Image (tube, rainbow, N blue to C red):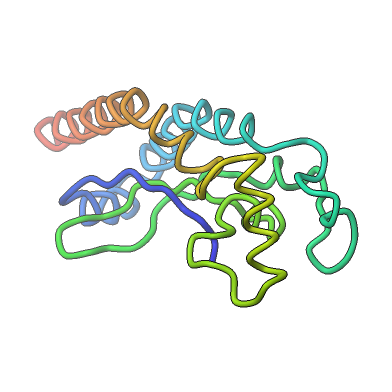
Length: 165
């Protein structure tokens, strides 16, 4: 499972779908602007991921550490709907080794080696989530306000165009 942190706004999904049909250029501009506003969130999460393998055992094998653990943290636009809630964007760790670093220990180790791995990781980097959630807690209030203002501006522009038509 990919660790993910989201910003959600109620009642927006239908508006964005309609916008895609009626004014696709505004929809594309809105998506680009929101991703730009979320860049500090990506940067904050990347800053919490080590450049070198977090533990010596992560240098080789199936889940070997690479620099992609930082570079594959990204923003994904859109997502699940839950009732009236629609996820506008998600912060995602798309690298398997990076996801292990971030979330190992969330559900506990199944065997002695797994428990030792989790204990060593926790001793050096703290409890899960080690990068994604701390970055989100730090940055979401600020970027959430910016994104909400951007959406409000876009909806205002759409309303002005509808009234003029």
